[in-house]
Image (cartoon, rainbow, N blue to C red; front, top):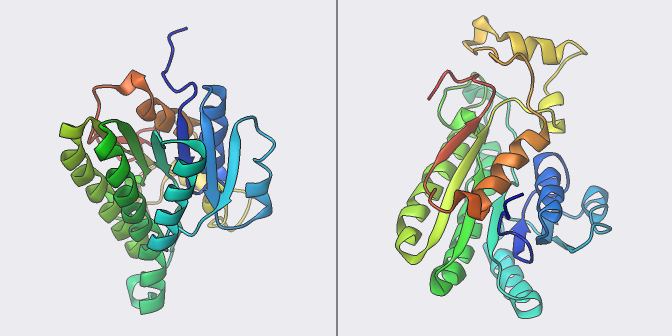
Length: 256
């Protein structure tokens, strides 16, 4: 098997307390990476501590000073951070007329500001070293309008374009920045929107009344499906890929 180049490298993952983030942590460990798993303090996050080579750290990505402090502490104690997976995100599923100022700010604080804080911290260190990889987990909603998801979609679109701009700045310095855009994925964020046990079937079939296409592959993604794409883009297998926005949605957006 060809080496991914991740063995021994230090990766920082946000949103690691469950779903896609936890799957990214586990896959990185399988590839031999050392991992700093971060999220808001939770039992789920502490459950990752038993994995070999995983360091668990609480982190609120909306706090820029806390992000910088964590980068400084990790690099002082464990060495340079080689790659970052920005997975932390929150959902908002209300129409624009029902979106309060506070709700708009809450969503952007994590989904957009959080990516900015991580990208800035990574660029200050990886850019100086001339190597590294950064992946943002965005959403296919960043490129396709969604009913009752304006705040979420707009925040993910901001995160996507920020990451591409970051890649443009850091490319000449040898740092790659990419985006993974999941569609409907079997996580608590997804199932929390379902009214009953037929929720998955409705997502797969689509919703003409809200102008939402179904999923051509006829199945939801698993967190592991998305993690595979993230870890690929962090690895040396993607050594000549940067500023790419990779949709992993079973064809749901009908987009190339």
